[in-house]
Image (cartoon, rainbow, N blue to C red; front, side):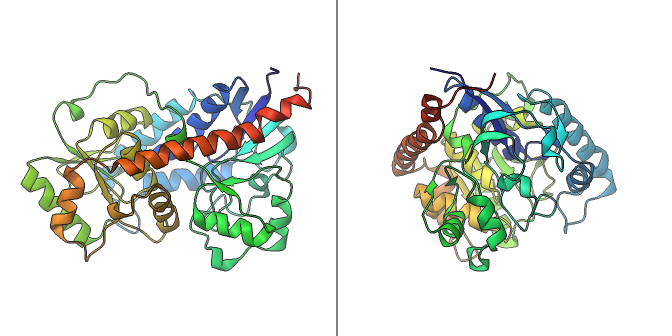
Length: 366
C-alpha cells in the first residue's frame, strides 16, 4: 500500500477545546490508516487578532470583569503552547495558498469550515478548496455552523463545492445545504472526536480528586441555571466551570488547556453544557448530561443529538426539574452507543472510499 501525503484543512488555532481536538483527531485518524498527515498551518494576522480578541472576552455580551483578563490571557498562552504539539505543516499565509506544500489528498473539515456567517473565517474561498494544492480534495464532517439552509447557497460557492470529489458533512442543516446546491445528498459522518481515539497527555489536578459536575459553556438561560443548581444541591456535588467564568458555579477553572479539558470531562460525574463539543465529550466518555440550545449553536447541537438519538438530553424552560435530575444521574441510553457504532462504520467506509482507494490509480507525492 502506497503512503499518501494528506493534509487537514480546518480551524486548528482557535482558542477552543473542541477545535483543537477535532483537528488533532482527524489528522491522527488519517495517520492510523497508514498515511502521512499534517494539519495545514495557515496563518493570518487579521484572523489572529479577531480570534485573540474574542478569547480575551469570550462570554460577551456578558461583561468580562477586568480581574478575569489575566486569567483568560493565561488560558490563551497555554493554548499557544499546546498548538505546537499538533502535527503541523510548514506555515503559509491564509490568503496565499500558493505557499502551501503539494498534497495527494487534502481533507477539509471538521468544524464550521463552510460557515458563510463565521465572523472572521466566513467567505474565505480556501475552505471551499480554492487554491488548495492537492491532487484530490474531499471533506470530512464539514459544517455550515449557524448558516441556515433556508438562505440557500450562492452559485459561486456551489461551483467551488463541485471541485470536491467526495463530500461528507456533520449535521442535517449542512446536508440540506449541499443537497439543494449540488443535487445529491452527502453522507453524515461523526465528528472526529467521536470517530477517533482521544489520548490526552497524562495530567494530575486537584479538580478531579473528588466528584463534581462539569459546566462547559457560557450565557446559560436562567431557567437552565436554576435546574442545574437544584440538582447539584440535591446530589451534594460541586459545579466546576471549565474554560469560562460562570459565577453560578462553585468553582472556576478558566486556565485549563485542551488536555486538562479532556481529562476533566472524562472524570466528571455529569456534564451541564450548551456547547456542541460539551455534548460530544459527555457522550464519548459515557457521562450523563443535559444541554440547551443557543442561537449560534442550535443547528450543530440539535443535529448531533438527533443523529445519535439523544434528543431527550436537550432541555428547555418547560422541562421538569425531575427530568433534569434523572438525565444527570442515570447512564445514557444504550441506543446512543449503538448509533455511534453504526455511524463509525459509515464514517470508516466513507474515508475508505474517499481516500484509501485513490492510491490504486495515483502515485503518491514524493
